[in-house]
Length: 219
Image 1 (spheres, rainbow, N blue to C red):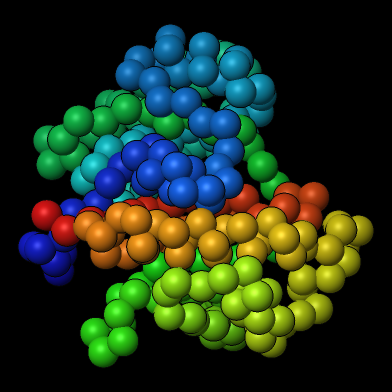
Image 2 (image 1 turned 180 degrees about the vertical axis):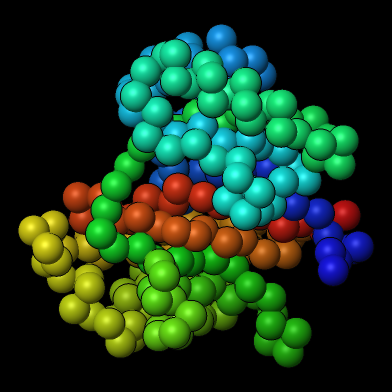
């Protein structure tokens, strides 16, 4: 059941907030019509991903509100029309978020979580389909510093996935540390933020990139 004391930001607004604090995000565009979505896709480069985006939409995949690997403007226009038609009155104001299609064999997760006893924590873990089974996750109380971020990376048990993997370069530790430090700054500078989920962080050419983000704030 939703917490009545909190609200979620749209994916676009979540990423904009995170970017202001140094969390790297992809070049994404928000479009209100199918034609505008096609123009946005041309600007970011094909293929693209299109998602229905709104403050009340937290579980896009479960509702079938994501279209992957769209190769051209016609496909984007058709997908955007389908997504906008799928909105319900409970979704409120919606738009289509257009993003580059990125791929990688490794997924991480990161975020901010509030511990009722100790306060806000930064989280880093292994993502993907085995995340729950492996439960390889580490936490630190905020604020964290760069050495803390490196320690968190080193404490993950699945270190083999952070090195060279299936022809891909190692995960860039500095880039991953930047994500964690950005989250720590969000916790310090944005007291209304109650939680952040970056899931997944897909590792592309060694760099972890959040392809989905959700920020929860106090009402």
